[in-house]
Image 1 (cartoon, rainbow, N blue to C red):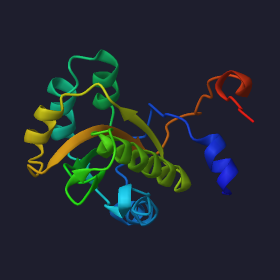
Image 2: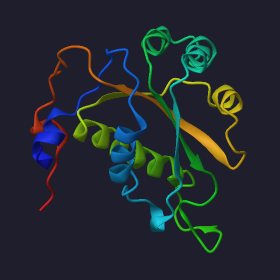
Image 3: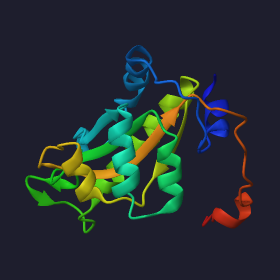
Length: 179
């Protein structure tokens, strides 16, 4: 699959088969994922893969702030990534913030999430990123190291049916040129 096709076909997928994605496939995914750029190459993104249905169900029941759509999607999930990041590194030069944006680590986590989703797509897997979550509950449940913070949940797997394509705004509405 060429890069343009990959980018055109990337969509959020919410229905998957019951298959657990094998470690060998995930190794291929992460071979691409770890190449995501980050502030000064600090590589703060961390990925906790959960394929234990009991843990996924606990997150569905207690870790998504009662957001019904996330609960529903997690109840059918068999593959979940908790994307986290190492705190206090990104955006700094010599222990001082180099920018007024004190949350640059969240930007780096977003880049990492996108790279992970594209890497899944390149391996014929689908994904959806969930942002309405209870990071503290999830961190405690999965015993996340204290120096890390939860950024997002990413459900992934083998798409169960045809992926729908939603319309996009016209380029003229979202791009400005100042020449």
